[in-house]
Length: 331
Image 1 (cartoon, rainbow, N blue to C red):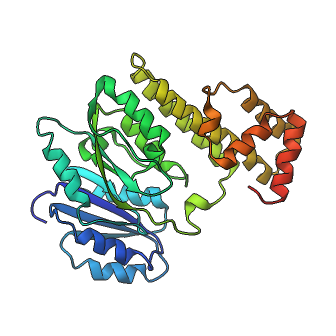
Image 2 (image 1 turned 90 degrees about the vertical axis):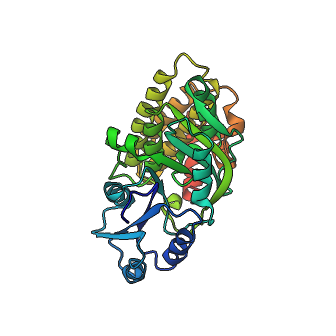
Image 3 (image 1 turned 180 degrees about the vertical axis):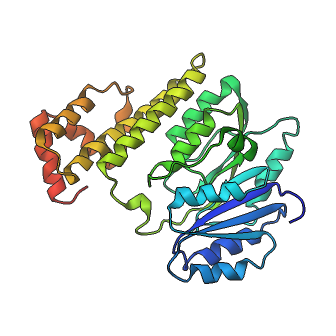
């Protein structure tokens, strides 16, 4: 393409022969034409490379082949290639409506006097709630909307967001390689900690495909969960420090919900890692002493509520109840 596009769409691909054609066809049907598509083949061993070869004939499509290094490394490779003013991330088993980019463009046009750092839409995905707030938010307005994004679980997704590439480049912002869960959330929290405004759009034009056996369904190791908590805590502290003079109650409640769920996940992961009863009991006691927001229980899902009730029993009783669930393969 001769002139720089407005949007760069980055699609990491690994063994996606069953879905990548649908994904790319949906992208190439966009009603807004100023965009490029960067597909990063992360060492696929199926027929994905052959399918991508067919699409490389399109002028908007650039295909990068690399040795398998994980989804974070693939996205980082795509960002190095991107030239658009805004960057978007798609997954190879999802698809978008033909007005996906047009919605973002129309919202940019509605705020011509603003230099929009980030745009956030909704997802066609029953795992997350809808964002009820819409419009342009800056300064003291940001914390409450961040709270809504956190409470609805939208804050951790890449796919309903459109990022100003200049900020990514200025921060040298990249996905953390070497972890396989929450890398999206970590990227977003770092981005949110550095921007001065964002735009929330009411539409939903991205379709998430709930693929059996995806990374989101696999068990995560104890060591990785501890690393995740370390990074999350530091990033949340950065955002809290930035907006310390604002009303953060709603956002803090959302953080508390996420941290409690993660703490309980760490405990249950310890059973899979064969920790001693004493070590597990110590983690259970940490949860019992934890300073979580009031009313947090009702925000947990069914599985989390069960774990939380068990962990608030006598520590020894809690240990054996959880051990019984572990033996039953309930987690």
